[in-house]
Image (tube, rainbow, N blue to C red; front, side, top):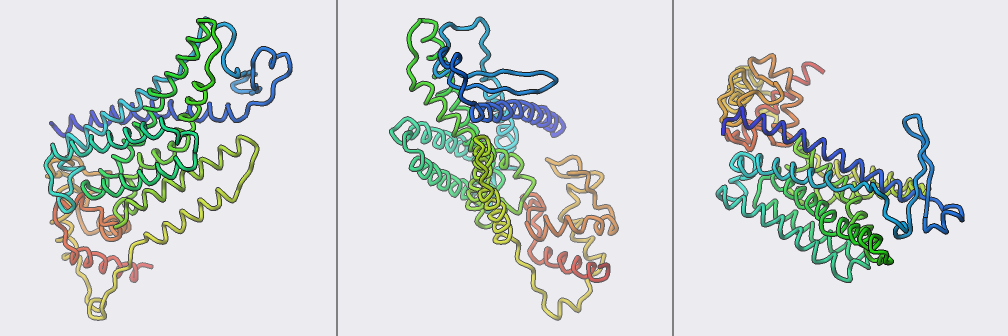
Length: 400
């Protein structure tokens, strides 16, 4: 496919995914907040079957919201459903995954240094991991474990850890993270399709037939909605993780991902408790400390230079030679790379001055994270990285 067409498809699908994702997550956050802020209603509302209500002000007006214990006596003529946000977010996400990591498997998903697999093998493994992850969740959430939240949570974390590790053994680091995101996102959309919507349809049908709704439907929908609440922040991190190679390019990247899932879920727990008027700052502070600790643990090791190396001045010509050979296929005015036909992020290494300008970025991506060159397509050697690191160090000393 023409790279220019691919870029436009990527832009359109990614933008649609972003918009629908905001709509879904916004609605999800609002209803969790709403449910957790309901107060005991006055007696006359209680007699009508209302379990809680609240008042709010927004956009220059007052709102009165009430929630029934099960359902109203009569179904209103207009009932608003919330499902298309979830379905369209999943659909655009899957299209984006397919475009980038399946159509572009050889560029983004396959890392020959990890597993020498073909494009079709990579696609099969990717789709298979989603089926296994979502299938396992659906089986577990339909068993008696659903009544034992802590045990179910432990089992799911163990499953996520196993999947995270397995994916990093067959895919590129970026691809592994994105597939964990695909698994979580499909579980969330599945919670809407397999759990929340059927439960809500059963409640509506009971009201229409004039029968008393079974409370289990409401409980099932609430359980799955709660699961979606705690997976929202982890999946948001995964969506932006490609921009932060210090996480996915670490040797224990699978464990880093699980740690971040824990941290983000804890932050969500803090805000959920705040909805109930329970301020637990230790949870939030603990999450911040855990983040700082994680950053320290995975920080790159500083390159040690011998005295002889320190005394050898790296010439600008040597630096330009390395950059031209390893980076200019993408980062130039006229890229020759078959994927990146325009310099990524507009960064162009035309001369030694522009190389100096971007030296901090070079250090972060080429030396520390070793994320660049992309997938090391140009085969930059460790010795070349060390040479660049020494040159940057010498320039920092001369220009403090």
